[in-house]
Length: 193
Length: 301
Image 1 (spheres, each protein chain N blue to C red):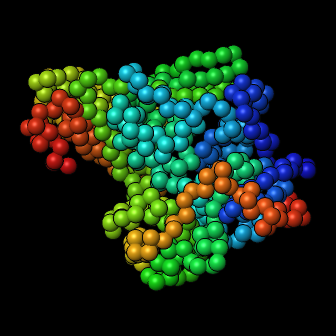
Image 2 (cartoon, one colour):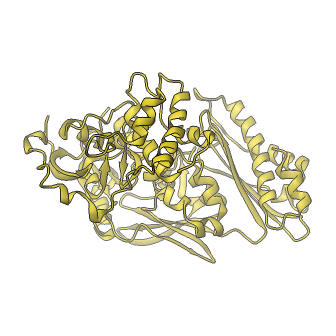
Image 3 (cartoon, chains in turn cyan, purple):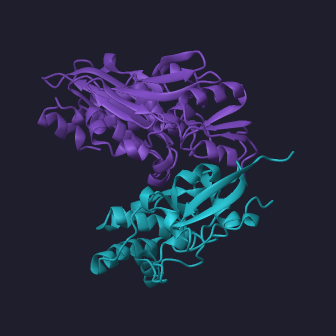
């Protein structure tokens, strides 16, 4: 049986991509396999581990619990989209580095996207708040102490520097402007077997 | 794992969605927030031939609050409802329950009506609807109907929805004046499925005496188990000993199951303890609670 393919256009990190996917392609797999954005990691594939967390219109969501065909209406931000265009790390990336909040790194993209949005919405968290904020994401290496420290440090960096934690991109400023900067992913990358 | 193949439709109009779903019959599934359906697909526990994605359907994302209560459309995310101040003031049990639904990240996508239609015996929002005697607005090929909460959930993951029918909204009535509510649960990890949970609504008169009391238990029976405790508590001052006796009576009505997370006996124990806590908090939250009653019952747990 030949599975029906859908032509989709996705807005990811300010860039417009097109891909050809079956309806059952998860957003997480589409990001990694079709768009080659392998920063998003896939752990459990049923919403428990949080490694695949991305921002959907600025709000954290599990990309393994979304279909790629349904994602075209949103602006997606992956871990690749957190740093500034010149490569300067996002405050959350700097904080994770400074606090040694990762070891193997597998869970890290999920934590980074989650914490970036959390600190944007909660600029002055206490330690208990920080711990609560990350309860939905699993890390098997660190024991979480340094991750909690990094949440607090992220907030501190943002407060000190007034650093620009990316807002949820609004539809009116979404990817269209970037169309010229990077052409849509070549069709051959869509609909891979 | 990955979902099995299915045909995908993304209608923009409710009638079109109903038509597509009716055409698919037993083989059709609605996709709203996807936080329950997509795990089921990924684990191959569900394999619908047709998925009807209603995220593009207009008119389903509204929260309406009036003196009668709160009406929640099928595309309202848990997080959106949790943040809605007017809804929380009209029906405080909404926010009390929503805060226990999975993790915030799941609540960003998951919908309240979807959770009710999913009918997981561990789900918080079916219990909120049941405790408040709410109702589900249903649209199907033969028109609209309203199904009372007590008739909506018919078994574990089973509802009164017929093939081709969509739950388009849930109505949460505002509790009677003088009513306090609370929702408590125990999970291994905050955000996981509750081993057991209890919601309670308790109404006090101006003298601080109970005029009505109900609880609803989750993970304790095949459906949210509503127990009317008014005969047990009517006329009392909702003192701890009185509430504990009523909680024990509620726990006897449960029919929990053994599984790898907890034994049936432990769940029944939790049902008693959690019902007691929920009743105490509900009494303390009642606007009619005297300061003394609130101090007696609210601070002990």
